[in-house]
Amino acid sequence: MELTDTLRTFIEEGQDWERKPTTVKGVSIIRLPATKNRAASLAIDLNPVNETGLPMKKKGIMIMNAQELAAFRAIFTNEKVDSLMKALEDVLPDRKTSAKSAKTDVLQI
Image (tube, rainbow, N blue to C red; front, side, top):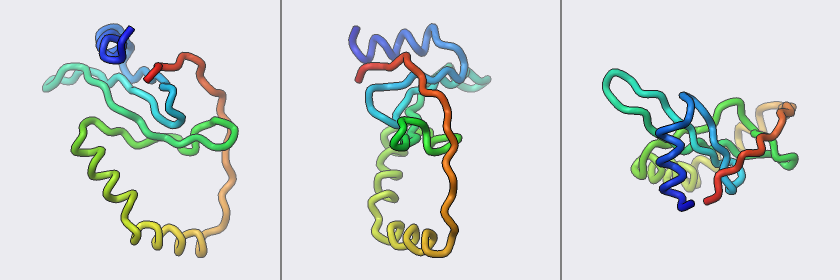
């Protein structure tokens, strides 16, 4: 089945807030429920995984269109953000990571 067919089936038959993992580590698709103003839709959820394959954050970043993706790319590639992160790491203590079980139903991209 083609990617677009798989996504079409997921939006039509998936449960509200259901998450479908992909073959790209840290990237999944979320089915967003319908509201009064819009039909059900899909969003890309970005949540990097650690060395054990578990999500690094409790919630990822939801991206719903190409414009949002471009805006995040611009932020992530800004050298000032790198400098800010380095300064934060110098100031803040190390954080412990939590472990969660990995899901098996993977969407092929």
